[in-house]
Image (cartoon, rainbow, N blue to C red; front, top):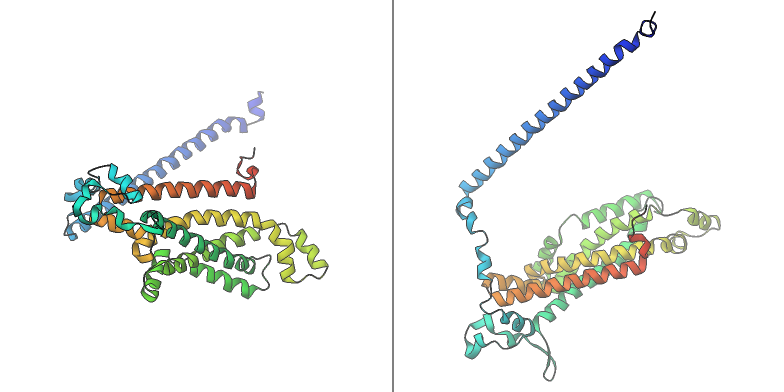
Length: 326
């Protein structure tokens, strides 16, 4: 008698492994087939919808597709030195004696501060944009901090307050800043005030969500100690929770400041003031030198804000928070 005779399961084991392998191969082949069919259906639906849109479009999308980037040729300056002149409001030989009209009237934008000392127009507009972002971030931070503790499950005074606060924050961040800015521009007239309100309201909702998630992950031992000595809710927040979360709060606020600088620029294009409005006008009028100067200033400013914000966050939170943990 052999070992296989005494253990009949050993004979069926190879057959079982083969069956499992065949079943797995069939399942994979079936999934690949279904995936391929789904992609084909999606491609057909996409092509059909694009063709329908093209037939409904008076401009004929497919016919104009080769000319998609033609507008870039309109924005190439005739003289690249005019980019520098536009940035610092210096006279251009191309605009001498009124030639070129608004395209080369760079000195007219100067903002005189004292005597012959002036701030270039685009620098002033960039300062306005940064101020809108900064004030909006401060407003959002001031309101989001208390709302975060009302919305956090582990710190909220009561469940109804927590639910109402969370719904308010969801409502505030449900609408893009540009939509809120359009609404307040119609009410308050165009300008930075409408932009500050729009970005500030959205910032309250966005920061509030980030903040209350941080609060819900704090160590509750210090809060239990405060409860044991009869501390009020305000005292528990102030002395037990706030010291734990402030570094993260500051980090998120600085990150939001970077986002708000970009949002303020976009809102400026719809009447929110700042550099966005001037950029929109320059592009629409085909002023190449002015457009390039604005894009260059905006690019450099955003990089500077990002780098400064990252440096400050590292100082507040600590270098160890940005290192990979092994």
